[in-house]
Amino acid sequence: MRRLYAFTTRVGMFYIAEHDGRFHPLYRDESLGSYSQPSQAADDLAGGHTFSAGGGIDTSHLGIPADLTEWDRLF
Image 1 (tube, helix red, strand yellow):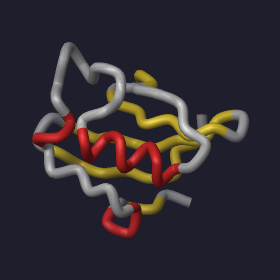
Image 2: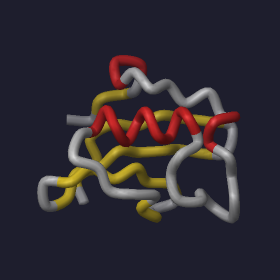
Image 3: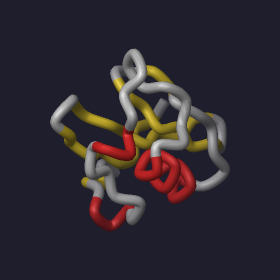
């Protein structure tokens, strides 16, 4: 997977990566879902609507922004 965006939280780094035309929010190298647009991945992370992160972390309480302009762009 090619990491495109990164955001640091108190529990560690979250990424949005691209693989085969799909966008995956990642935490500790674990995919938390699959989306057609990177903005959808960021929005679901911000709202806590992804697969469970790292043993049940609620991502809605981590200050993750839905707006990708607030993420670090890696490419």
